[in-house]
Amino acid sequence: MTTELVYGKKNTDLTREELMDKISRQMSEKRFQHVLRVEKKALELAEKYHVDKEEASIAALTHDYAKERSDDEMIDLIKSHDFSNDLLDYGNAIWHGVLGAYLVEKELDITNPEILDAIRLHTTGAKEMTELAKVIYVADYIEDGRDFPGVIEARECANRDLDEAVAYETYHTLNYLLKSKKKIYPKTLETYNYWVVSN
Ligand SMILES: [Fe+2]
Ligand SMILES: [Fe+2]
Image (cartoon, rainbow, N blue to C red):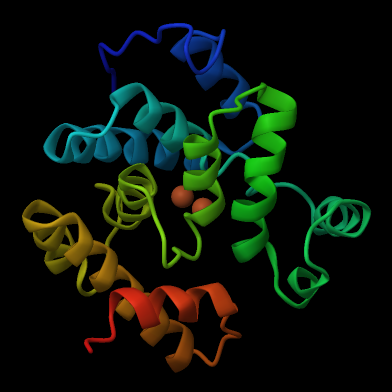
């Protein structure tokens, strides 16, 4: 999977290839392939919805940067930094977004707040999301390797309307969490209340 995208120096001093190399060292080959598929989908959505492609590429490539960090390291980070201690009640499914944004800034020197926000919110969504954050949230859900009941509808939503795709994903994610009796992170409810509930 290749892209013609060449980075300027606006968001990172790294080339796309150098960034990919650093990211691939953080995760299994299987997850790295997922990350590349998220980038492909994010670039398609960025083209369609007029989002900066370089930002979409960098946010997509870095979104799961912290996914394979150990629980011990994540717990240490939460305790030793200015993160809410409520996070300790959850697990890596939530942590890798919030702490991922921190680690990407610290270790990869990427400081664009919109990119960091897109990483931070990709696991939960939020009431307020930039178009870039929506692109990453949705691309992660519908990338070409995803195969779950409803993924075709989710892709159709994303082709029609980005906000509709955010709502679809949020509704179905929450349903899944409820059905499997998993703990719901409050931010996920905030996303649901804003994007799904019709007033
Ligand atoms: Fe993720
Ligand atoms: Fe992901």
